[in-house]
Image (cartoon, rainbow, N blue to C red):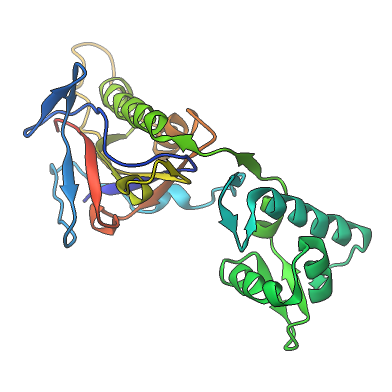
Length: 276
């Protein structure tokens, strides 16, 4: 059984792959580093691993606090640009603070005013916010809406410029290098990284992208060989250390845990493979 982490980054990136570390067959040298690139376009691929692989899928997302939202310029969110989305959300919250109540409710006309859109443009915007959990419909008249914590997070969002493809390649190379060093040195962690695979917008030919998504398969680290003298300690660290390893590199990066490699959208490219 494998664990799959997904690392998401709001980056401006794209296209073909650069360098990555790898251990295993079908590799070549690029820029002095070993790279193994496997592009998967078809049906889901089954995975198997050593008999010590034993990870609870999805454990990394339970009880996790909501991370700050990052918005990318030149991209629309619910029909408005990044700055307008953040500023309008802040105006809505400011309005609610002036009229405190047990349940934060905003009227339709107030939403239209604060987002500075027409009545016609407000309908698809609000419908999309309802689908994505930013608003909750109150009553049956479509005139009042509840504001969720997810909506509130947009008022404190970071607004960033998209990054070029070249910097995306550097980031992927760095992540692959981190994975290699993590497997060798993080013996206090009960998991190790098996593979990294990039998918999503990076697989297009766009020169600038709004996100970078990397799937990471993981498994339980094999038992530590008991030393000749003394007592062996059991690994205590887990998925949060891996999350911090990735997300600590940049505010763009976000880690999400998935069940298996079969869940990765096609096409994707393997940029790192461990020797296990």
